[in-house]
Length: 331
Image 1 (cartoon, one colour):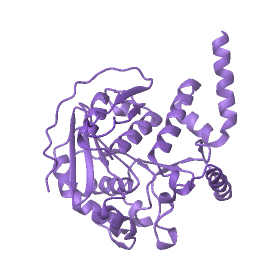
Image 2: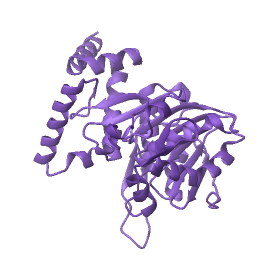
Image 3: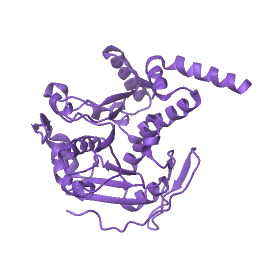
Image 4: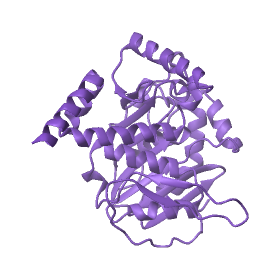
């Protein structure tokens, strides 16, 4: 029960423009050349200084990178300013700790089809008494129980701003870990929790116990976000950021969401894909958030106002932004 003993090579912090950055992965000479990975985030002195959308993009990319081996995570996260990276693994429950001079980010790894422990955790949907109050998903709790002693020890002396993030099963684990910080000897409480395609974790009593700033991204028909079913007593937590069938941020009522899911499902069939599964891919989340960041930054509006208007008006807001941009260009 120890973190990976792979040595941590300090990666000097570098400055990049805010545009796209292409970071090639090291190729294994025994295989074909590794594909190129595109990162959209740029290094900053403090994550807290970023807006919601930039934070969402950064944590989405870190949640995606968390599926990679340690050496590749170093290569990709190092240029973002994370000069200390640790990998924790116990019986298939896995997480990364990434530290910069100002921040400490815990990213839990999501479900891997080749890991029996992950599959067992996903399907074990019985609820058990939580370590705080209420009831929690037994499989997700077991994953965190395996890993928590390592994480608690690593974070016990942390004084940096603490963040949690994860995709899929990793999102569920990050949610439970963030809640456990309130019962532990960890000095720094979580600043925010960002999850992508996360399942429901616990009942209403459990999710309302800890006051955590939680941003929860849901992509259209993503099937993982709809399990376990609410009639089992499970509820979602946090502030939902729903992406519709076109990858746009929307706030929809029950009937509108049903229509939108049907639209996405039919569009998937026309492209010979099963929408509930393809919508769960981390790449879909990253691309939609990336486009939103560019649209917002071109709008000239305050971020909270832009998000509210985007959820309500959608295309009309985009047309308004385009008109404002054209007006500025003609001045």
